[in-house]
Structures are given as structure tokens and as C-alpha cells.
Length: 294
Image: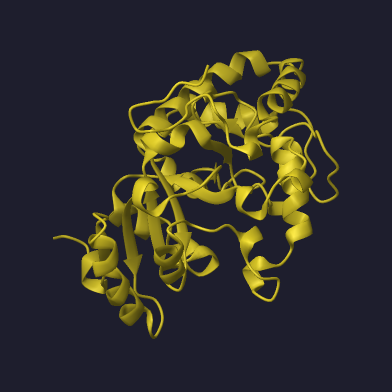
């Protein structure tokens, strides 16, 4: 029976991109459980993930030009819906393959709008987020969209690091943020991978040791790239995957944007009142907002 929650979500009705996910993950979890010491370190990692999911913010980044389409469409489009002529709309075959590897779903059964969207877990302090994750600006965008966690948590998955880097997706399976399982750190291979060289659970033990030594805490996970710089690979962020429609009016909690290029301020100031009219706070961060307090 499908349960309708107070926020309108169908808790037990998963988006199509996650329809086969639980069984896909469970097979890999059993493989990990056969590894020496995994059953000792996995509870440490799973409890840590629960805590940071509870405390953190579900965010994604876009370029300022995306805001106009978001207002027009009433929803956020994913890369599979973009024209092949657009740089971010290219590599669709790769994205299809990754969808099958990560989520166990046949990509040919999905409409372009049904593919997942990428984001990341960060702190709720947007000033700190924009300082520590400034490196994400030019790769992903200078507009940070924070989603309503209570609406997204039942259809979001998580992994440590960029799942696309060096074929890492073939060595992990994300975990659902409402049903945490330690499958989301690079380990034994479960799909074809040529670039990534990883066997065993060395990185699971590495992360567990960082947690147990209080080097990696619930309060500093936004700094994970610095904290794990002695590990191959470096974990740039904690990646999130959003499944299903991201609705403009229902799913967006707030928007924060920095001014990085010529023309940004004009675009942001044009969009700001339109989002605020929908009840979505919109802050344009200026240089003076980042000056250290004395």
C-alpha cells in the first residue's frame, strides 16, 4: 500500500530510476559483507551517514542561465533533456551506462525526464558552503539551489566522492538517504572499469578510521576534500542523486548565488523577485558578504 505523507510525497512509490535499485544494492552489499572486517566498519559508516544526512542540506549547483528555464518550465531539467548541441547535453550514452551501473535500471526504459539529477550534501550555513565549496563554481555553477529535504529524502541517493571520476561508479553503489547501507564508498568492482584500480575495502576502513579518530565529524563533512587528501582518490564532496521531478514550487527551499562573471548580477537581479514571489528566498552574495568578521 502506498502511504501519502504530510508533505504530499508517495513514500513507498519510488521514481522509475529507482525501481530496481534495492535488489541491485542488496547484491553488492552481500558481496561487501564477505570482505574481511567490513561488518566491523560498516556500522560506523552507516551511523555517520545518518547523522550528516540529518544535519546537512540537499543542494545542487547550476549556472545563472538555468534560472530562466526553471521559472518557465516549473521544474528542473536534467542533462538528458538538453540538446546534444549544448556541451552539458553531450555524453548521453555515458550517462545511460552510468544509470545502469549505479542504479540497476535499464536506461532504455526511461524517458529523458526520468533520469536522475546530480547534487551534493553540504552544510546549512550558506556562507560557509560558498567559501569551502568555491571550487565547484566553475565546474557546476555559482547558483546553489537548496532542496526541501523532507520532500527529497525518500528519493535521493548518496555516495562518497564523484561517482563519474575514473570509473568510480563501477566500484560503488549509492545508498538511499532514507535507508542507509554502506555500499557508497569505492571498493570491490561490480561492473566493468578500466581506469579505477581498487580491490578490497581499504577506503571503507580509511573513512571509518577518520570518523573514529574525530578527524571527520558531523560538523566538518563539508571539508571532506581536505580531510581525505591523503587518500587515493580525494573525495571532492559527498555526491547526491535526485530521482523524480524537482518541482519549482514544491521542492525548492532557497537559492543562493554569487556573482562570478560579467552579466551575472543582471541575470540574478532579474530572477530574484520572480522566485521571491513564489515564496523562495533568493540571496545574491557580494564580495563584502565574505569578508572575515573581526
